[in-house]
Length: 482
Image (cartoon, rainbow, N blue to C red):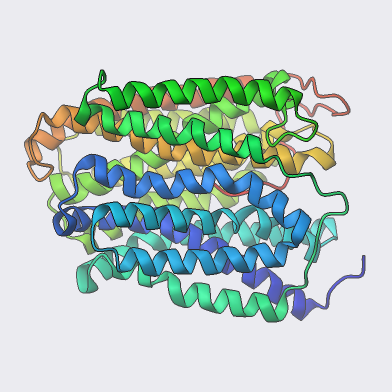
């Protein structure tokens, strides 16, 4: 395949960076806006959970399907469509008259975002066929996502403090418009040589597993665990889960490859990525509420404080691969888990303490733990896998991660809601008491990351055709961001 001119490749990489930057900003910026949304829309804790989780669930459930669609009909086409849908969803969110409308438009945003990550990654791979240049380009692309995570709280806090929470969504429009126009003019169309056939039944079953599960978790504190709607949702989730397993095992070209799940390392990576991203989502949701409701910070102040874990996360993600090459993945994953454990334990023990130096330590440790664990877990999960299957395996891992992000918000948000016992979120004493169990759960999650990190870097691969790497090293592979 002939290589593109350097300037043209730079334009392609820039477009893909803009796409993933928007996704990163949206992940963290909205959390800072939650208290303002609560006041303006009269939202409950469960309502704010839906505002965050609806976006992540829609993205998670459609990522694999969007990637395979790009392989079939053209990646440029799917990328541009994703940007346009994301922009339209952002505009509608900014204009939303009430909470149900906002949640619906957040789903539309998630549909657009699903077409950005995996498709942009494939476009970068097509533009940079040389291995060394490809690795550098992927590092820049992942750095753009980390930059978005870091900028989100600051930009979101400043916008909320000056122009209101709706301005957070307007921010996506100029980026999306510039990215879409540049993609139309500068990105060449590409397709897979042997694209996978669409698995529409599998896609539908994934939606009917995750959607009702999130509903049951979020609504149980309000409606009661024995409520008909909660029980019915759980029943749909279980039935859909069983149907998904049976169907995917019989499907010629499944959306989720069952063969991967016969490998203990891959299953361990799925468990680890679930814990890591579940903790990530829950922490940013709870921390934004804690800073503004318990510590009485303004949105701008909270945004600056949220920059601490987001910035450390972005920086440590970029350093993870070089450090793993030098010291091995296992000690870094154990260290990441212990950093998460220490951070959450400090927050649980000193939840009522507003000492700023302690808060800095807690947030630095949390960002360090997530930033190191994320790329190392994703990479360890696909190490030893043949190149023609690593992309699909990475996509499945990323889908589990995005789903866990939403479920983490749902579970620990529901725990917070139950602990309030009807008290308002603005009551610092009630909030501090209600959020403490969530911090202890995150403490246990950090220990789980350390244990799973040890297991997945110490278990030989059983994949056919794969060459298992040394358990103390990590093989660099392409992977989608969280």
